[in-house]
Length: 195
Image (cartoon, rainbow, N blue to C red; front, side):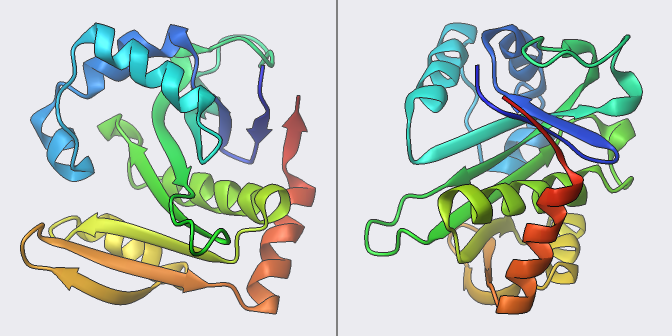
């Protein structure tokens, strides 16, 4: 069992097989597929994807749980499917720059958007990546029509570095200053980490 991270509003847990049916249900929604630039997968393909994510050393994914929906006490290692609202991922795919990671966030449950869950999840993931993987640069690719996500990342200090007319997406980047790095490391002091 991997690590779970608990913040003020969310708990980030490893993507487990028990999460796959609900995740698969989310990824059948055309609006989410478009917003995430994803293709629909069969349930079997989704299970294979979940397994591959957990085995790939260059990817880290967490399911986002809304603490308000956790039934009973949070138990590390339990899937808490009832509280699933999205996921947050990092990819370290650039062999020329091992200190760069691409980050993604999805709050799939529409009733939970605009409440700061995505922002907290991104900050927690960034703090985790800085402390445990040594990431210095974060990059995000967002559909140009996804204004809420673009605004959130810009408020976090990300700057536009390119636009793709073909893919209709904007690439933003945050190069960590010493001050931003220290801010993220301080955040790890307030998170509850369970292994």
